[in-house]
Amino acid sequence: MDYVTAVPHPRSEAAAPTRSGRRSLALALLCGALGAAVALLSTRQRWSEGMATVAGGAFPLTAQGSDVTGVPAALAIVGLAALVAVFAVRRAGRLAVSAVLALSGAGIAVAALLGAGDTSALDEQAAKASGDTSATVAAFSHTAWPYAAVAGGALILLAGLLALRYGSGWPAMSGRYERDGTPRPRRAARPADPDRPEEIWKALDRGEDPTGADPV
Image (cartoon, rainbow, N blue to C red; front, side):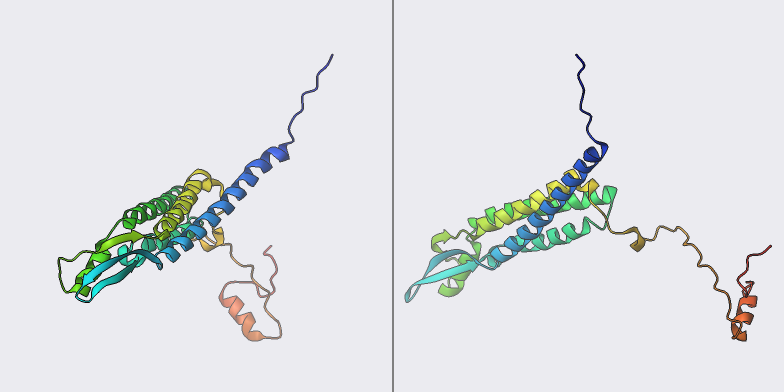
């Protein structure tokens, strides 16, 4: 009994990497852009709160993410720039930019985790409110926004890892915007207008046949 072995169609085999590259590209763009937006938004929100003891009693204090640390916002901008730059470079340059993208996400996550328990911003406010430079904040607590920044950093990290893994198959900026030193083809000479003598003389000065005929 003869058995017929199914042979995959060449087009289906060639299309599989293309589909995988498109999916990874779309996922990386989504994760990178969303992660940067979440990280930037979270730094504008209230991260921690506490109380300071003053002459009139307890005084409530709050600190935004940007007051606690400026690292997440700065790295979110770096991550966005790296996400765009991935398509402007190739080969080793793309690997380097992808690594920067991944490291930006990791840095955001670490800085946000450390900032969740940082009381220095509230301690500074307590010292100003009480007039005592040694005063510290009491009843310290933090919100969920530092962890939102951690999630944003994780998304950027994922985008960087996708770029490192699949970036070699992603499209790059069109080569017509790059200058590689290759001489451009010379534009074919246009026959001079016989009704305009000045064009005939200019063509003769350039060593061209004003009729546009090929030399014999």
